[in-house]
Length: 194
Length: 375
Image (tube, chains in turn brown, cyan):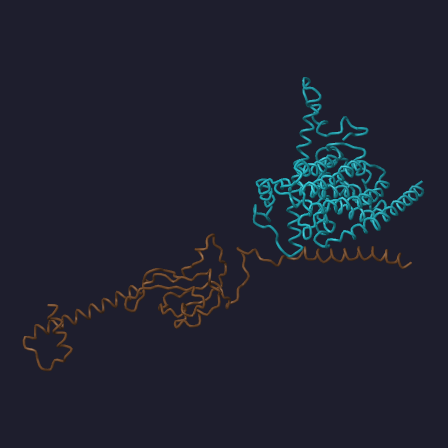
């Protein structure tokens, strides 16, 4: 009797579990998919996500603090100084090495290197993973203008000085005793130049 | 393929079409050969189309059941062209025969597997006037020819000279032997109800009642459990999950297909989907009214019977019903886990076979009583 009961019970169980299972899968079949069509749509990325770096190049002073802080030495930068202004040569970050630890971000005195939200690092060649973070090479337009202005100022100053010195030398056929040592040197410079 | 008693001029719709068109000087055998060629072309294209659509459907159904999208990009609309890309990839792949394999059998096996479904497909009537082989024993022919798939599968498993393949082939053999019996016996119930072995006549026997209420499952309620048994056995026959033990991806790599690649592998694949379609057609014809639907009922009520419109409606009806069956198989596949081989055997021999026999008895009693009441 128990065997018969078990036999019928098995049939009932099989049918019931199939129906229950199909109801669940059927429900999911009609639901909207929860996945996202990745390259076209993207899920929102949190602000503090540690992705590929971005650099505020105008602020950067080429102090190498980030490169020094990097535990695996993947940051390299090179810039030529022109007085206060920088002529950028390179600022590379090797993403073959980078472990996205964010340690380069904290020591920055100008707060100019940040970690972005971009994470796709798909390339066809490994060498392409050595990213250049510079948005421009050489000098910025503003920097050039500033430098030109500074140069112009300097030149004007020097010209003024020179003019003054020339005047002085012109007048200095008989130098007065009140002249300071500076002017005396300028005199001598002017004389040397002349 | 021989019709026992052709009721029309010939057993092939193409031949019937071509015969009056052929000029006097063309010999009869040439017309026959042309008809055969056209029929073969149509069946080949049909199998390819069914396999392609089913692969796409399978991908989409499985994806949506798992809350994914599935292919979306190739071809634009919901990735419809992904199957074309797949096909191109399979054709271009290297055709390998492993070292130590029995070369002749290895090459022959996929052809035999495809040939079995190819032969069975010939018995599938698109519409009452459009068929490749009009057979009064159509269902016998389908069941007989589809079971020869097993020979191809066992051949593939043996010839591959790989333990995974052999395991898969052995499982297939055991499974098919166990499930052929309930498959055939459960079909006896609608056959008794409708009183015919021919697919076309079975469909005609279900005409009327708004195109729905004369279906075999409504004519004889014993057909409902019989359909469940038939469906389980059909799943096992077509090697679909939960009975995909011959393939058993997670345990046997790919079972009997492990050593195959490229176009040969795709032959097995095409056979699987075409067999699913054919089993769904059999279920549609013998349980769910065949060509009969409300649309055909309306046409019949307006006196349209025969002709291109009626044929088209019939073809659309049967193809839709069949693809619903294919969808049901996919739904089941992505719902149920694979059963163990001993569970498969238990289910086949201890449950389905005796129950199918019992249902045949019940169907006989029902028919007798129904006939007695009618008289």
